[in-house]
Length: 133
Image (cartoon, rainbow, N blue to C red; front, side, top):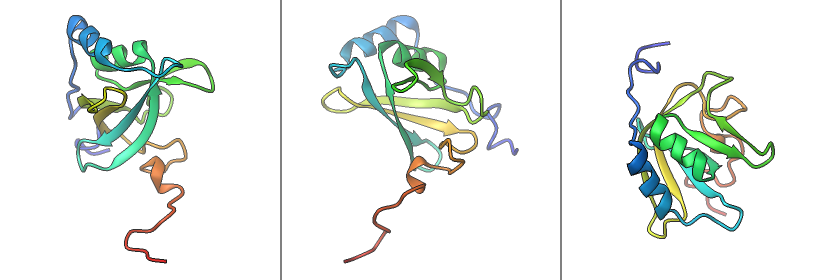
């Protein structure tokens, strides 16, 4: 793996505990306690995947600099890349205008999708760019 594709070449952005708590307090979580998190490549702006976070997963993401999700199917936390090595290092984070969606820009090491595709949206394209019907 080249230095550009490795985790060592990229520092993760992090917040302190108080700053992260203030961000979590501003988020409008859905009735199930989750907020959608769009994961975008800091390196080329590609949308890599969508996951869900509860308050604790968001806090961990903001303070640890590694993306952590809440698995709706397994009902547990999972930190992207812990088993595959395909980690996501936080470069920046933002809330949308309503505070009910989080955008996390990351340096992605390896593919983002569990299928091995670079992006989860590469797996099933519905309309090809420039297509007309």
